[in-house]
Length: 90
Image (cartoon, rainbow, N blue to C red; front, side):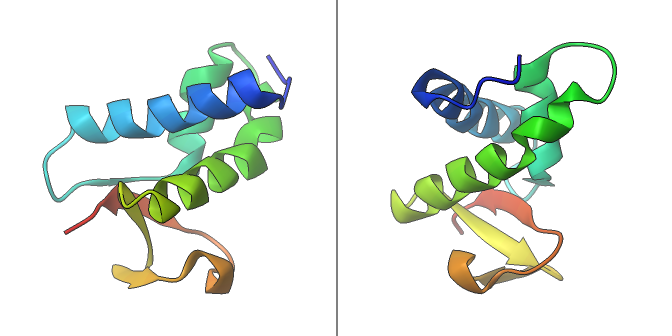
């Protein structure tokens, strides 16, 4: 599964929300968690879904569902460089 079309984008958004729902209220996830969940296979094919997962997180930030953090602090999605985490809005 390496298609990056609209259906995959929606699946990534849903995966982010589902993963956060299953964790504690203060927990965060990495975009790779969502990419792996949507890819669902062995190997490293999930890596092709990393940028789509980051885009999905940015859309969820715009919708007020989650926030993107770096070093435990919320950051504006367009300013984030390097590794990010995703958590529920506090």
